[in-house]
Image (tube, rainbow, N blue to C red; front, side, top):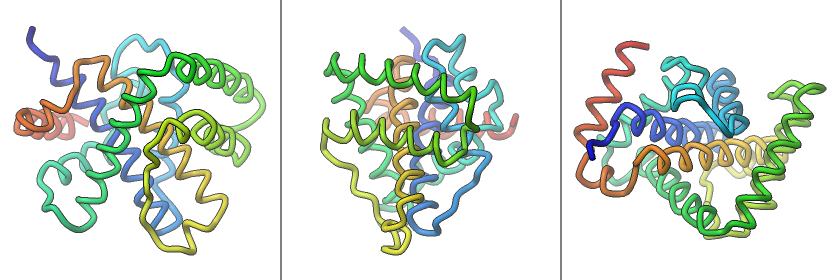
Length: 208
């Protein structure tokens, strides 16, 4: 069966976007708020009508992820590109652990439904909701292991608000990794389909 590289590329860009947000937060203490909101919002849609719907039906909402993905597919084995690759692959590994654990999956769905109720009272980028997203990551995903080691400046990594944002971004990365599997993504594409992914990402970027 032919793979739908459009959907696979969008989902991979979603993972890369989260990885890039983690990198920005860990090194600089700030990130692209617009892209951060897109990634966080993607965690709330458990029954999307399409892959693009997860990201607000706009390819431009994944601009950071698509650009990061192009960089990652082209990257050398050292430097910022290598860090991004490590986060992306770590999120994929963690998603497989989640997939194999029905109890964790059920708990995750339950917590996300509860979160949607809070959205009627708080803004998605409010400290309250970012803390709630971070808590879901810590309570449900971290124990599945292995832990994702985040690199950055110690001042940023010790700041509790930035820690919460990083964990919320990692949770969004898991959402995209779930999607990546659902639409037919896998390690084989990363090994043998890099050119197809690269070409598709460039096409989507050109249209966004």
